[in-house]
Amino acid sequence: MNILGISAFYHDSAAALLIDGRIVAACQEERFSRQKHDAGFPEKAIENVLLQSNLKMNEIDYVAFYDKPFLKFDRLLETYITTSPKGFESFRMAIPIWLREKLFLKDFLLKQFRRKNKKFRSEQLMFSEHHFSHAASAFYPSSFEEAVVLTLDGVGEWATTSVSIGKGNNLKIEKELHFPHSLGLLYSAFTYYIGFKVNSGEYKLMGLAPYGEPKYKELILENLIDLKDDGSFRLNQSFFNYATGLTMTNKKFEELFNHSLRSSEDELLTEFHMDIASSIQSVTEEIILSMTRSLFHDYQIPNLCLAGGVALNCVANGKVLRDNTFENIWIQPAAGDAGGALGAALALWHDEFGKPREICSDDSMSGALLGPSFSDEEIEKELVEVGAVYEKHSRKEMIEITAKCLADCHAIGWFQGRMEFGPRALGSRSILGNPRSEDTQKTLNLKVKYRESFRPFAPSVLREDVSDWFELHEDSPYMLLVADVKEEIRTEMTKEEKNLFGIDKLNIKRSEIPAVTHVDYSARVQTVHENTNKDYYDLIVEFKNLTGCSVIVNTSFNVRGEPIVCTPTDAFNCFMGTDLDVLIIGNFVLYKSKQDLSLIRDYKDKFELD
Image (cartoon, rainbow, N blue to C red; front, side, top):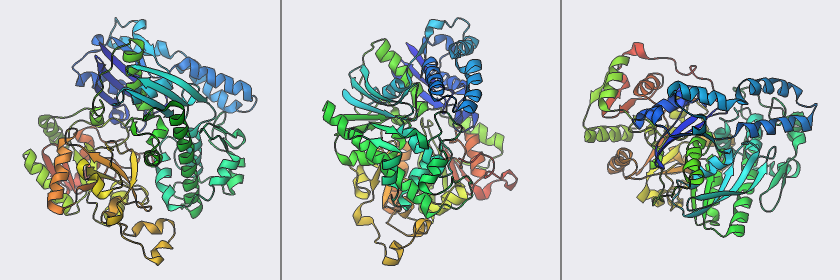
């Protein structure tokens, strides 16, 4: 049986394909449309997962959509009615769109699939609840026979937080928190207040937090949120505007913190902004830890799965891991709405059809390497078309050349194998650097990524060596856990350095691997496994042979505001629009110094800032 799962029409549209319950392909629409967080119908993503599987639409037995539009419309109407006349402007803007497009989504989807298969029947189109899709995406691919599943996001239909219990092939939602009381929306409100883009800038808020102090934590807990011992909570809506308005926060929110909304992208980030980021991060961690401790007490199950957009908060995830309440934790790498496409398909296979579940020893996500790949012939064809100057090498030579370039502190675009599913580059569509250089972080941020200098980079480390570098003993293949750098490799700060403020802390060398050591001595760790991504694993082994260091810098292959590159042409365009020194695509090596200078492009202003 072939099941196509899709998510769409909010953000991060995606498609995923199951063949007899096995995950064979998944990718986001943004990678093909080149529009970050593309929310449209995932036309190209669907085409690609079918192409990867050598299937046509008439061979698809069922399509599963990741949420239920009528329940969302019910929430929208009830919210406006209960708060009337407040929010009329938002109501006036939202309702016509729903009446024209979203309320009759089933008809729209049927038309789309009948364009591809005239015999597609309405009973082949199924709908899952939003939080059930998230929970299914986390539990079913995990290696656990039984687990507690915690889903945290902005909002689905009504649910903003849900707890499910998975056993075998059965998954059941046990309890929920409902809109407007949402941890995801609380975090997004502070993202908005600091001047970052909602549904995109939350990563930046998390990265900024270590530069400040949680000075406003008690103010938040006393005024904005009523937090109970079990982690359940209610938000004081008098400070927010997201339920019925066109903004996330209001004037009362600004008055509480005695600072106006930071609206300009270029406006200086002050000590206040850093302290606010630190405060909401600390509140978020306290809420999540209260929840996880309560859940273990209630259910006495040693395994925890996490999904939903908040599960991408790797700092909080690291705190949950170190809390040792649950013995084992697994986090869906595509934890946001893109993963809902996969969860909807899995929910249909296991929950609706009752199909048995084959449990893999680690997980069944294939390292999240579920997107398209390109043969050497396809790569060379695109390189010729774009006018690239390149060398072709054997695989062994390519690995050796890349490792040598890294050792020489070159910034490298790395394009190998199948593209990653989810927001993280995991060693297939990555920009790589030398972690031992004190200049790498600043160079990559300002000259390659064109983003704020404070944003940290992740280390990729051989799985067998992770405990030599970090206070971590578990797998972290999806870069979703933050751990501290080992004490033995840290560099002690002087008294003067400790007194520095904010961004001034950035240039201080903190360890033997300064490029991946954040200001609080933490790092967002990716463990690299030989059986999952051998090319990437072998590269790090070769780098270790040259330098004695089994860690390299890994960040996504894109510039700020651009989706991660998908094709060789995307990679070449990014290469020529940035200060990357070398581009490695398959077995092809491209040096910037040898390229036609007329192909250099201004990439900085091509994409909308996030």
